[in-house]
Every structure is written in structure tokens, then in C-alpha cells.
View 1 (cartoon, rainbow, N blue to C red):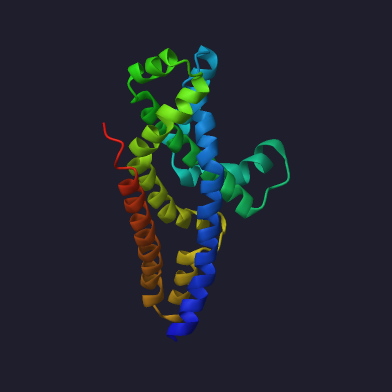
View 2 (cartoon, rainbow, N blue to C red):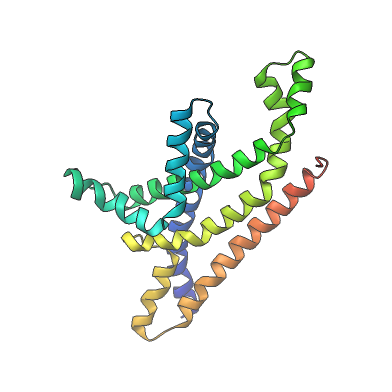
Length: 213
């Protein structure tokens, strides 16, 4: 019985991994775009971006999933997008907003004197950002980013609210057969994957340890 349960949970976990990796692929660069918008010197863009981030961070991801999946059809009469697409859109927007605030905090934490030193050396703004600021920002945001990424692993379970067959749903099916342990067994998948991520981020942090301050 153990092997069939494991195979069934693996099929659900593969869907979990798809949500996880695709969300990162889209949300990490999108978060940078949102970050630049929230730091813009043009007041209307800055206020609009920060207002949007405030709404997304202040409402549950589950609610955002429901709105994105059902909203276009109910409000505008548009064809419903697929469940997986709606999940990916909701997760990407949500995490992009969280990542954008982490980026902004990292960029704003760099002392102004370092920008001025780069200008004195005749460097352009792009060169200053790439050669002086970027690696220091990566070092400073690594820990909060790793926390959000690990949270994302667990948040993938929310996709079941709009009918995505992920690992917890796979485990829950066995309750109908009178078995509880497969549902508890799903926790092992999360623990192993998050353990691997924790080791990865620890190694990255050590490699960047020569950036102090």
C-alpha cells in the first residue's frame, strides 16, 4: 500500500513543483519591475504602484485566486482562463509584490555615499548599480527572499481552492478509504523539499559572506 500511495502523492507533488518554479520564474523579475515603479520619482506612478502592492499584501492569496479565476467571467462575461493559468497569475502577482518590497528595502539600505563614490570615478548609473550596488543588495535580501520562497512552497496548497490537484489534495483522497496517514505523509514531501532549499540558501549566504555591512 505504501508504494501506490507514494506514487499518487508524487503525481500531486509534481503539480506543486510546477506552480512553485513557474511562480518564481515570473514573480522574481516582475517584482523588480514593481520595485522600480514604487521607487519612481514620478509621483502618480509611485503612488499607484505602492497602492497596488498595499492591496495585494493586505488581502489573502486565497481571495486573489478566487477573484482571478471567477472574476473575468462573472464581471466582464469573458471566457474563463484555465485553473492552472489562474493559479499562476495569482501567485506571480502576489509574490511579485512581496519580492518588490524586499528589493526596495535592499536597494534603499545601500549608503548614498557609495553611489556618489561611483559618480566620482566617472561611472554611469547602470555601472554603479551593477558593479557596486547589486551584489550588496543580493547579500542583504537573501534571507528575507529565502523565507518568502519557502513560504511559497507551502502556499502552493492553496491552489486546491480552485480545483488544482496538488499533493495535499492527493493525500486527502485517501481519507475516503479510511486512511489518514497518506495525508500526514504529504508533510514529508514539504519537509524534504524545504530542507533542500534551506541548505541551498545557507550555501549561497556563505558564498556572499565577504560582503559586510
